[in-house]
Image 1: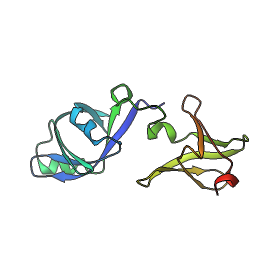
Image 2: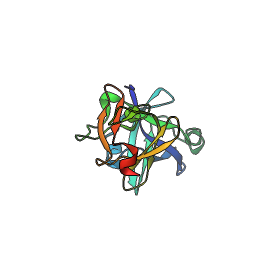
Image 3: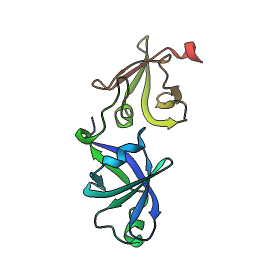
Image 4: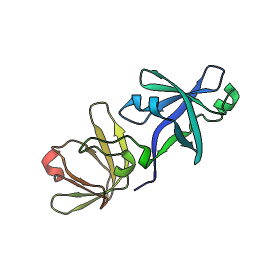
Length: 162
């Protein structure tokens, strides 16, 4: 499992005093209110302020005091250490733990690895790259088991849900 988890991506500056606009990579935007320590390019930063907008957070990072300094952070990911991540509900997983999982059908047929996740609004879709690329809706009726410890996802056979 990865030690660091991405919680957002800096998409722009905000104002002239060094604030940055962050697109959340988590289900709970409110998690940014309690964020005090994060990592950008593997360097620890202190978050000293947060405002929320619809689907975005505005963060003030200690030592970033001008729009020019904030501009240099554009397109960078904001990460947290796994132990500082929010606690997930049962049967919820971090995207970083799903990507690179091996996918098999219930008959044991290897289908490939998850190489990306598409966020559709209603449910996620796992992009599985194998002999051919398949898109697997992350629905309980299709995904029957996720075993993060063994890096394995089991889905119903393709002919059942196509």
